[in-house]
Length: 181
Image 1 (cartoon, rainbow, N blue to C red):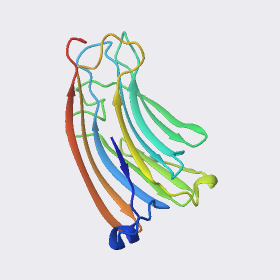
Image 2: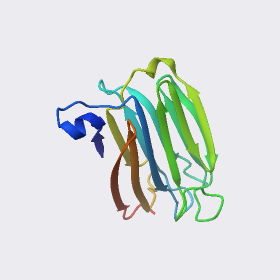
Image 3: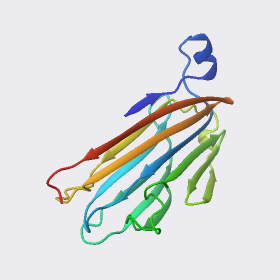
Image 4: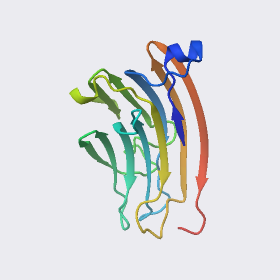
């Protein structure tokens, strides 16, 4: 899924201007395995008008034997944070049912990521004047696994603030993979 970001002025005047230098979005992810060894991934990626990465937030499980997953955040130069978690249905999983709150903020050159009650910030001077133009949501499997996550469910409610004017996007769905475990 992908969305193109209209500026608040464009939304009012429909002149086709796109992008926002200051940008905020919030969403809720559900990332739970049903069996040991299942794999999968979710990503939210923000890019500029040239489709170059500004920031990314994702979780993936490549562990084909156990139940270890990663939360990972990206900046234009590569990985910013990589945090391990257990994608079970229990309290140690921040992405279990009725949880999974994530947010991402761009204010000039500052990027801020939310994970499990904490914020992680970084200053990235090369993005200061870049506009967030596209939002990509990626859902899929990891590598050559034969045990796909039996249910990848996502609930994405993005509250996007562009130049102090909120725009709401609501998308929900369940992706079921049969025969993968």
